[in-house]
Image (cartoon, rainbow, N blue to C red; front, side, top):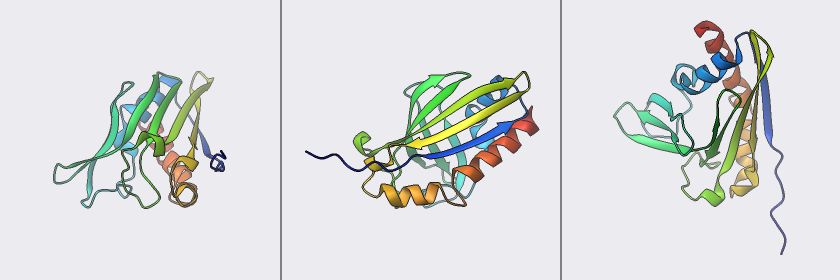
Length: 160
């Protein structure tokens, strides 16, 4: 039996001029303050991006009409150092509930000093998606994780 070919993970790193606790808090508790309004999968505009702050919690969007559209689950919750999220969105930007077809977004926070934090994001296991190469191209592109982390960094420094 042969396994699916591995698709390289997408990695992005940003350094923010805030303490590690602040970086983690803004990334998780302040998720809606920095998530791009254009990045949603529902048919209606995004009203709120939600990340439930606990292992087993959901991360999802709430539309302007009150509808909810899931993105995945919180797989690991280790404040202020790490959070891992399942990514149930395929390359066609549709939710897929099957956990065997979900990739993972792991975010690590490293204190570089008392007022500086390195945030490293790794979107991995993309081969689990039927269209993982398409998804990888999208999340590694111009509107993908690099730009999103830049928005996070700006918000973290503004909220410090």
